[in-house]
Amino acid sequence: SLSILNHHSFTLHSSNMLLRKGLGICSVLLQIILNISFTTTLFAFIEPAFPLTRPSPPSRSRRVDMRDTTSSSNNDDESASASQTNAIKWGIIGLGDVCTVKAGPAFYKCHGSTLAAVMRRTPGAAERWIDANIKDNNFPESVASTIRGYQSVDDMMREEDLDAIYVCTPPGAHLQVVREIVSATSNHKIHNLKAVYLEKPCGRCSWETRAIVDELTRRCIQFYPAYVSRAHERTQVIRKLLGVNKVCGDRVTSIQYKQRGSSLARGLSKDTGGVSNNVNTIPWRLDTKQSGGGLIMDMGCHILDRIDYLFGPITVVNSTVLRKGSRDDDDDDDTSSYPLVEDFVSMNAKIGQSDWSAITSEGATVHCVWDFSPQSEIDADRPEEDELTIHGPTGSMRMAGMGAAQPIKVFDADGKLVRTLEFNQPEHAAQPLIQSVVDELRGKTSAKCAARSDNAVRTSEVLDTILNSYYGGRHDAYWLREDAWPGLRMDN
Image 1 (cartoon, rainbow, N blue to C red):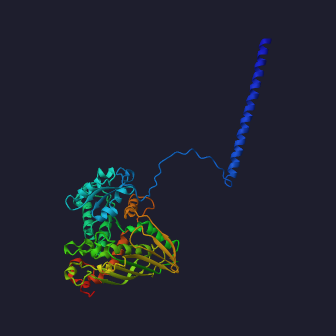
Image 2 (cartoon, rainbow, N blue to C red):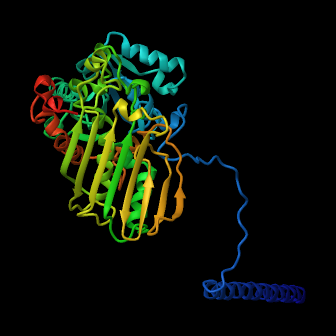
Image 3 (cartoon, rainbow, N blue to C red):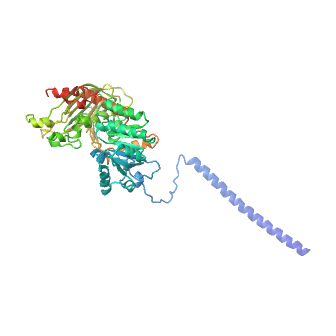
């Protein structure tokens, strides 16, 4: 019994010792917890006023895409791949120089966009265009392996599941091509065509442009005119300089533009003012049946649309339209082969009210001169001109009217140069605008293309008002009644 009692006493003593040690450990742990809680609370109170520096986690190298979202490498399958879940599938109608250089590559270089088909009426031309681009390694593999060529709009529409179509024919064919597109959607029960992107000028005259808009609107197909300067960085900077920085003051009072010479036009010879002595080889830009008029249709429309976008709608007050003709007025053969279209235009106008102008401009005067005649190039000491000037109460801006990368010069009220801004040339002039079209069609939030059907109609109407006196009206097929043009009977 004594032994058992001693054993229990020893066990009890050992248990008490273990209990005391356990309580001691718990006490220490409790103190640590309380200290941590107090420190955390203290940090939470102090840190807003005195931020504490925490060590950064170990860095890991990763590939960062530094490209602008409006462009990508022509070999970048990620940005142009047809495998993208909602990439816009494009078809192109017309494969001339404008398509090849200015716009065509953008359809497979823009993010979320791919080129599925091209069409040209000349037998084999579409396939040759594809082969040439594959040979030059222009296409990403995803496009090179799938793109197809066609000779008719109907065949392309029937066989391809297209989201949008780019029309790049001369303006004289625009309305007919749009009607062929609309007819194909009806005949083949095509319901997924979202948009038509149409080269400028959209029609030979305003009634054709309105007819194009009506054809597409009735079928809920979005219409985007290719007034590409609206999306250029330089144009957006001009809007900011005017509206935010107020470099010209609180309003614009006058706008002037002058262009002299034809070298900026595509496909024309500078040596002859863009004209061949062979009447059968007149460039389409100088053939009214295809262009709707002279070079003001192809080049002047850009300036008129830019003024509209920056300042508001243009109301023409008066205009002078002439055909100065060839350099050698005594050479009857040369004069007879010179195009019948106008080659000199002067316009006075005013800016109307709008809710889209970059700055208050209503009532501002507008004076523009376009001189594309060979006579304007006789004096070798006078270089070609291309200058847009904007005046306000406290300053002015000067820049080239054409081109996306030409600098902007800002002057103070005394005419002193204040600053010069320079820009990078887009890889393809139309790429920024096409990217905005793609973004809108893909439903990107806040994405809205700046070029719309209403501004295309306004520009066509201004061109009609300017040129009406020369053609004896532009409300009909005036390109078929050349003998009746009043402008040809004027003593220039």
